[in-house]
Image 1: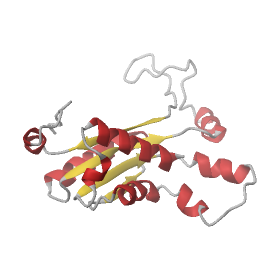
Image 2: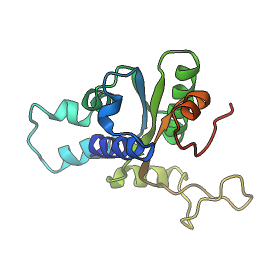
Image 3: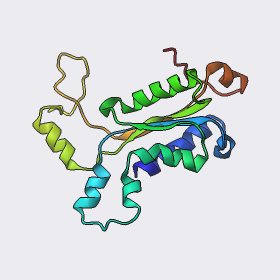
Image 4: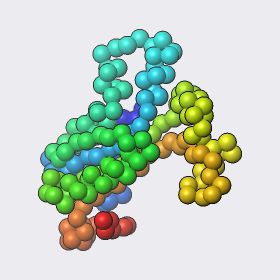
Amino acid sequence: PQQRFAMELAWKAIEDAGYRPGQLAGTNTGVYMGVCHWDYAELFEKTGQKVDAYFPTGTAYSIIANRVSHYYDLAGPSIVNDTACASSLVSVYQAVRAIRNGECDAALAGGVNLAWSVNHFIAFGKNGMLSKRGRSQAFDHEADGYVRGEGGAMLLLKPLQRALADGDSVYAVIKG
C-alpha cells in the first residue's frame, strides 16, 4: 500500500506541475522518499497470509522510491530514508542538495506513512510518547506527547531559474 500510495502521489505531483508523466521519462529526475514503520508487513504476517514471491519487494521500504523511478523511467538517484517523524523533511532536504550539487536536474520528494497496526500505538503509549488528550501541541508548555498520523505528500522540485524559464507554476521557493 505504501508503494501504491507513493505511485499515486508521484502522478499527482507531476500533473500538478503541468507535465504528463511520460514527459519526464529518461530525464535525470531523482526520487527521494521518507517512510516509517512496517505496519503492512506486520499485518500480513499476523493474519497468516501466505508469503509469495512478491512479499519481500512489496513490503520493503527500499523499493518505494525505486518503483516510482522505474515506473516513470526516471534516471536520477532513487533514495528512501527512515528518520522517524522527520523522514519526509529529510527527503526534501536530500532532494534540494542533490539538485544543488548537480546529482539530478529535478526531483520528486516526499513521504508516505500508514498507521495500520495497534502495536506501535501500544508501545508508544507505554513509554509515554502519545498525548493522553489526543492533541499535539509541539513546543507548548501544555504538551503531553504527540498524536500519530498517517498520510503522504510529494513535491516536484526544480531549480527556480529553470522552473521560471520552463514556465512552471511556482508555489514556493526553498531558500535553505
